[in-house]
Length: 61
Image: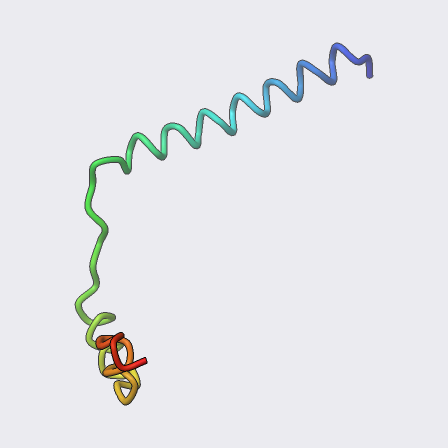
């Protein structure tokens, strides 16, 4: 393969990848994150709250 063909192939692949990335950014821009209430409840119930006072009240440390 000649250097020109390698350069053309690389440029085409790079253009395709960047194009897909920009399209996904534009599609998702301005939309809120999807929140799963069941997953939030599961996370909140599995958290160890015994050290929450040290996180919330920084004056004690």
